[in-house]
Length: 322
Ligand code: MEV
Image (cartoon, rainbow, N blue to C red):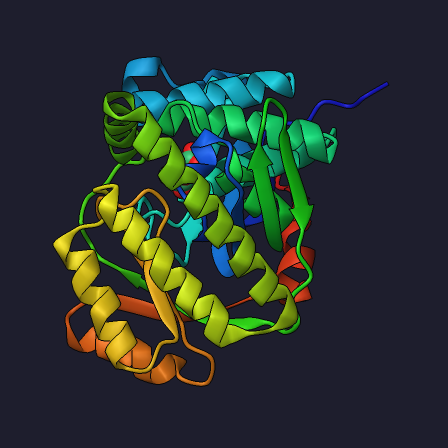
């Protein structure tokens, strides 16, 4: 017989943030993408309150979407969402295009699984986290959740059923991640590109295929450890993204600053319209991050493709406080 958690029981799980290295937007149209978990992210802690402490909906202080997400996820584990307190500690900017909502979903599902003492199988956990991500962003390709759930570097393609495979890197990759500080949403740029494509399907479909070819070339460069070729591919994809209208003058300024400071390539990451950019800067992360900070932007160095990130992501722990 399964023992239900007692009130006061608490569980927590870590989930990494992510960057899309190659292929955002065109992944929505069936082209491939390469994405990676970062070596930082967020820790989600869930605590079960006593039934008497159940918060009335209007006093819970959670916004509508957060409440919907907690209730949706808790119900899958046989828990009453109104009794679940959620605390999130993050060392990445939230809502900046670095997958914080995907990490929240993955962390929440893992923490609730530990609390309810019935962790979901990886595929089910990823499916539930993807449902949660859709509450925040509307219909998504699933690449963000796949990268966060994998904890590593992935090749992702969405034909009817999404395909996701780990990529083994020749060596870990040193990036700089810069945050534009511009408010953004994923749904807006995705909808704007969809409208452009509907107006000129032949031209946009051809450009999507070209972007897909660039992603394949970038993946090959990544696997053989050719940073120069990977950087050139990132720059080419940034040109395409700018052509789609999803870059901003601020992101362009950041990308220019990163390249001038010695980055081998730089592009926006995620949906754009604000949010974050990445620069490939092996051996030059300090200089590139300093150049971005000198322009007034938050920036941090990150390494992708280290096994430790994948190990950390599986870590969920439970404590009983009662
Ligand atoms: C957002 O991180 C990535 C997009 O390609 C949207 C999606 O894949 O759902 C812009």
